[in-house]
Amino acid sequence: MSAIAGPGWNPQNDGPLARLPHAPILEESSMREKLAAIRDTMVVLSMQLAFRIVTMLRRWKVTDF
Image (cartoon, rainbow, N blue to C red):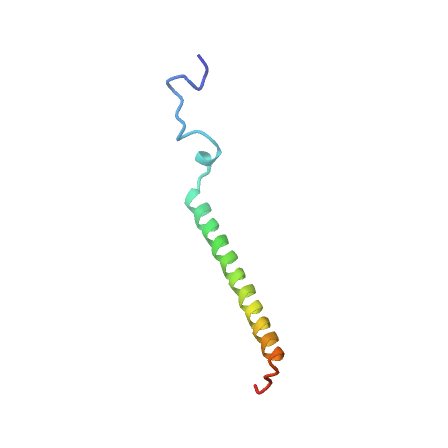
């Protein structure tokens, strides 16, 4: 029999993630990174929208603002 098939093997407590002392901190950090990526994406999209609106207004020759 291999070591994996032995009775003492526990897949939930094995591996590098189980050895990390602060797993909830990593999840919070991951969530912060996701929120930062979403924030940055929204900033870029709003800048694109503003640029396209100005371009469209110039094309229509509306400069009364």
